[in-house]
Length: 200
Ligand SMILES: C[S@@+](CC[C@H](N)C(=O)[O-])C[C@H]1O[C@@H](n2cnc3c(N)ncnc32)[C@H](O)[C@@H]1O
Image (cartoon, rainbow, N blue to C red):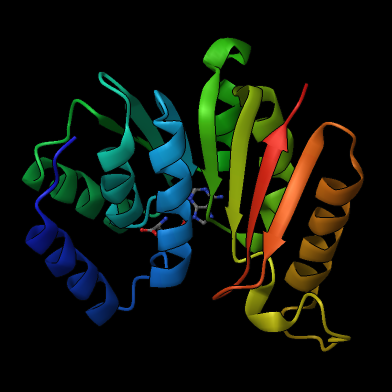
């Protein structure tokens, strides 16, 4: 899919000016390298925000490929729809409004996503992972952003603020390292990104 690079830069700038948390450049570059090799037919994204990452990922879709992306914030959902229309990508990107914990459950076992990108509430990553494992195709890839949460996850951080999210991310890292069906790699770049191949 061809995307106008200048328009994408504008969208990124606008998101940053409005303090919308979007994928950082170094992490985006790593993900784009993977997507370029994989040329996925189906992607699921958890956490659309205003559509910046979904629009970028659409560049790497195989012919006729599709992205489903879930967002629970109504203003961001509306903005994502607007942005996707501006890029004329309504046929390639389907935005689902709702809480991903519930919306993922509604997706069928036969979904067979090539790639699932998790980029939403950190405290829910284990629940997202469980559903992603069900929805990804055998040999498919789960990518999770922010898994090192500003370096707190691998430190001895134990303060009240963010404690739950940090502990849950520690548990998440343990699961992707120890469960036999996951072959994972955690990269200490930006906020930390995990690439997890799923062998069912
Ligand atoms: C980091 S932003 C996503 C950024 C986006 N992937 C990008 O790079 O352009 C996280 C988004 O996930 C949404 N979110 C958080 N928890 C969610 C959940 N349980 N279900 C759906 N959306 C969620 C937030 O409202 C927020 O817009």
